[in-house]
Length: 171
Image (tube, rainbow, N blue to C red; front, side):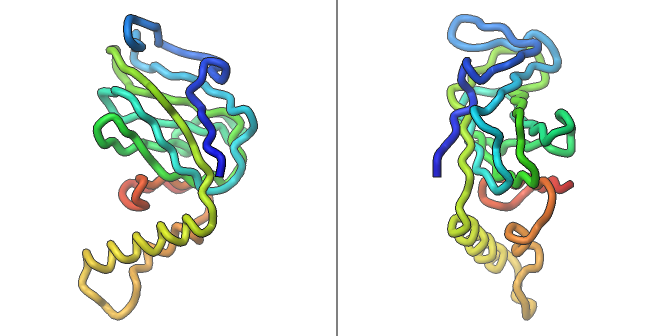
């Protein structure tokens, strides 16, 4: 599967409260963001999101699924050092993506933002990993965890952390 590099100058169609400074970027207000237009709309399906950069807060990605940006279609990226990741299920094509690197004034750096559409075997593997982890965490109660199967059967927009667990946003 092809990875789409989204944080490129030629894909940035708008910015708000952002300026360039020596060695990076700076938020000049309380709502810094970049609006990015992928070279082609992001199709329906599951995507692995990867952002590398020095951010002081949780980065968020908003997806315009045809009705503008809103809180129902937002991915909050999990952070591990300078790596920020999430899994997202788009139930409609996304024509624009908005990156909110932080919500306060201050310096930050975004080195790379990419999305890769997951294949069905990758989803099956993630489901199996999640079921194994959930089974080991909880005492056996005679059946598999009902929550874990939903990565394959859920409807609407969904955001999970990169391991397929944690905060979940469905609409």
